[in-house]
Length: 114
View (cartoon, rainbow, N blue to C red):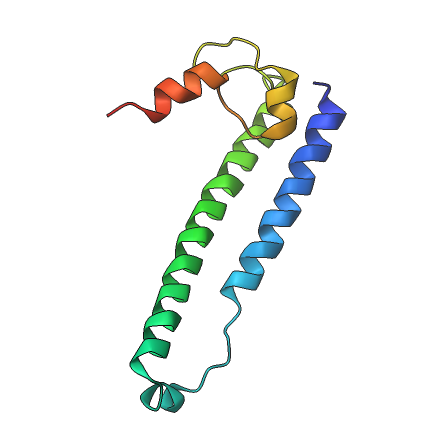
């Protein structure tokens, strides 16, 4: 993949992630006293939604960090090569996951390490 395309894809994903994180981190403007009057089922739903948002935000922060590392690799001229083996990462994989750090097989092995 050429450098211009890599930068374009990384930039698009960075913007999307930053926008989504900003939306997740906006205070909802809830009134603390209104929580007292909530039905327990409503409180459970609210808690579930907050925990789901926290998990999503954590995943997005990890992706953002991976994008930053990918941008560094573009600057260094090593983008598109596995950080593990130096093997080329196929363009199709980079189109789907521009911040990919490993080939699909390497990533699968990496993910299943205990």
